[in-house]
Image (cartoon, rainbow, N blue to C red; front, side, top):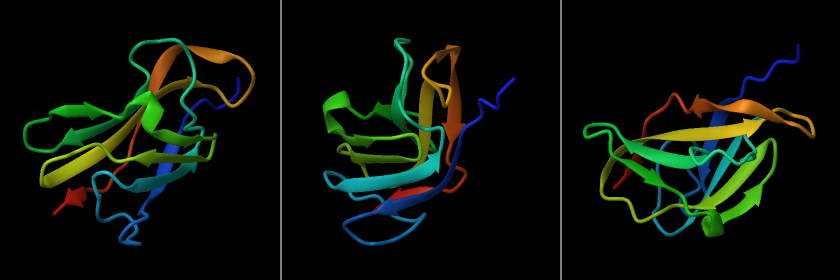
Length: 115
């Protein structure tokens, strides 16, 4: 059976040029990874910013996904309040032409900050 796991090793805030550090609402964020393409019909699929204190989840609108590739996502950061956030990607992408039966989640392991 093929490995269906995904990983997010790096996130780049395009506006500030910082890596694995800042988020700039309304600007581009480049997410580099493995098997992170958003695919499948499950309503849970998408890209989310999870505020670390309240655990409030903010979804990225489909129209704000600029690039949706297996190893790179470029999105427009939603209007987030100041604070710390984790990036979460939920997808059924398997690396091939068929999608996984159930969505899987990849969470970026570093805290990102909106200042």
